[in-house]
Image (cartoon, rainbow over all chains, first blue to last red; front, top):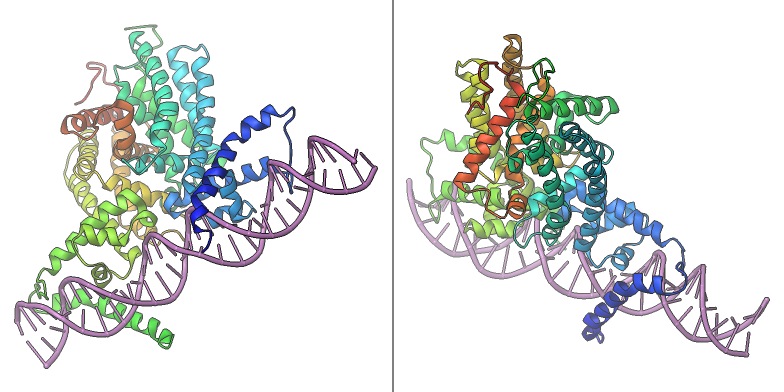
Length: 250
Length: 250
DNA sequence: ATTGATTAATTAACCGGTTAGTTAGATCAT
DNA sequence: ATGATCTAACTAACCGGTTAATTAATCAAT
């Protein structure tokens, strides 16, 4: 009642402190100051992971901060200590996911393989990343659908930091392969999304697959099978049918 | 306080009435009964359409019943008059969407075309349906991701009524084409989902596409372009390369 | 070394806005 | 006058976010 006027100020002060924290850490001769429980990074990581699961399964609107806190074995207020609000936490989860993926695929981009092998390596890396993080595809798909004006404050950043760079590199590889005559004349602007679709869909639709085929689509065997199918599908759609291995036939 | 005990009973009574309504309608000599505003079917349809838009954009959790009512130019209580609750309304929207799609693709299944042309016709029909209902892909994708145990009461029904029959028919066509030697030896269990992925992804990710390519991906021209790209992609992945013509099979 | 200030880490309890769902009644075609 | 259609106003519950207090690690000066 009496303190209602100070809400905003308190908030702003806290945010400033939070923003300064990293620099402060680094400026002080040594990091590790430690508070009561002494495991800030662990708590943060636990929150991030619990949030990733909750968000991927329920979406931002469906996700419950109480559930995240509970799953992370942490008090709910701690979420708001580390992250400004639900939306910011969601953003951190997204950056985590896309950051990991970008790292993996860029290792492939920076290798020096011929186009054909590079595409295979790219698809494989992309696929394997999602196969070992089965909740990320839903996260990705969800964010893509939310990206209407005003709905998502993250989408611009994500496109700039992840989608654009990755699309750019894959596009280059495709153009090179086409010029060398090993790829069919496809339009990267359509082919790249199609590839991603084929890779991602299986995982984001896993629950339906389970019902349709009456077995768990996420066992290692099934995933290996899917991997082969994806590579076959994309290869057949992209590579020029080689006649009896008779070199570059333009 | 005093009436808290009667809530459930009132609710049950209402539900019974509601469940009986469809039969009653049909039993009475003619529909069009009309109440105060005199447009029951129109109201119902308006609600359904507004709900489809809201659900596709925000998901069930994010959708606001107030927003749906407002968009349908109808009082919120009317939603609950026609539909038991939010979840049931959502289910009706889903059946609407999937029902329309099923009708379209089954017309193709029942035609007598050779496998190759039939697949092309199927993909075209599927694509065109979504192209003219751009909010349905998101609806589909959303429901697929929600289909965890306990999350969705609709998924079993949807799989049984739509996914399974459609998968079954497409699967038959694929097997036939493979046997006739016009298709590559693909596994329908993987190929069908891949096809759907390629068709649907472009629409459900339209907002990202807009940012990535800096133009509206849903103009008629762009959609036509995408259509060609999808058919090319799937054709190349499925059809045995015919030696005479390295065909982009339109 | 002991003490006391400082700050990071953490929590229990609470608050108030939002939202699904309800109610009691109005309207009107038949 | 009856029952289908429709509405304004209401309520209970839920849920994101806050607060004020607490604990523990570090530091500074005794």
